[in-house]
Length: 381
Image 1: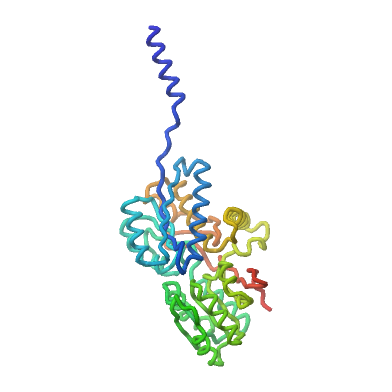
Image 2 (image 1 turned 135 degrees about the vertical axis):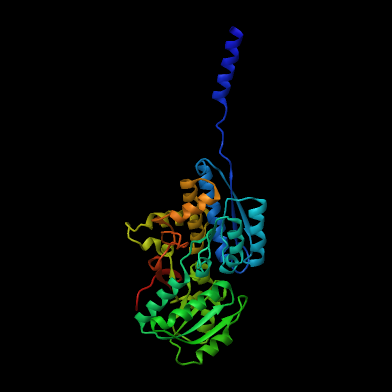
C-alpha cells in the first residue's frame, strides 16, 4: 500500500507542478506598404500593429491566445499584395488580415478574401472597397465621399463655387476624383478644370500653370496619397498662385508638411481627430483612446503619430474585439465585426452592420489646417 500511496503523491505533485495548457497561437496577417511611395502610410501602420501585438501578448494574449503577427511589405504594389494575400491565406493560414495600405491594393485582393472566406480589415479609404458590401471585407478609414462633402461644406462657407481638381493615377486618386465630380453639382460647386498626374511625378509645374491660366478657378482640390501632395503645394507657391489648396484625408501625416515646407502653410483638409487630440474636450468619447495611442506610439518610435497608424490601430482593436466576443473561427470573427457598435477608434465611433462595413459617418471628420508647421483645427478666417 505504501508503494501505491507514493505513486499517487508523485502523480498529484506532478499535476500541480505542470504548466497550464496554453491556448493555440493565433496567426494574424498584414499586408502593408512599409516601403515605396506609400511608405508614409504603411510604415506607421506596421509599427502600430507591432506595438499593439506586443501589448496584447505581454498581457497574456486574446482569450489566452498569443498572437503571431506576420507582416508582408507590399511596397504599395497591387501585384505583390495579391501574392502576399494568397501566401497568408493558403500557407500561413492566418485567421484574418489587416491592410492593405492603399485602395488599389485593397481592390486587387478583395475577391481573394471573399472567395477564401477570410476576414480582411483594409486600412485604405476608397468607398468602393466596401460599396458594394463584400461579406468578408471591412475598412477602417473614413470614406472618401464624407471627405468630399466636408471639403465642399467648407467651400460653401468661404463662398467658393468654382474649383480645379487634381488627382494621382492611383486607386485612391481615381476613386476620390469620381466622388468629387459626382458630389460637386449637388453642393453648388462647379469643377472647371480637372487633371490626373502620374503617382511618381516629381514636378507638376506645367499642370499648375495650366490650371492657373483659368481665371475662374477659386480653389484647388488635390486627391492623392503620394509625395506629390507636397509637390503640388510647392509648385503653386513657386507659381505665385495663392488660391486655397484643399487636400484629401490622405494628407494626415506630418511628414507631408515637412516635405512641403513653407508651402504647406494654410493647406486645408478633412481628418480624424487624432491629429488634434490634445484640443478635444476632456469628455469627448475618443479623447482618452487618442491621447493614449499618441503618447504610446510617439514614446516608442520617437516620431509623430499619423492618421495612417490610426487606421491600423482601428483594424487591430476591431479584430481583437471580434475575437474576444466570438472566438477564433473565421465565420464568427466576420459575424462579430458586423455586430460591433459604439466602439471608439481613432477614426471615430464605429457602428458596423450587414449594410455598412465601414461603420463611420460624416461626423468622424474634422477640418484641419497647417499653421506654423503643425496641424491645428481649421477656423474660418
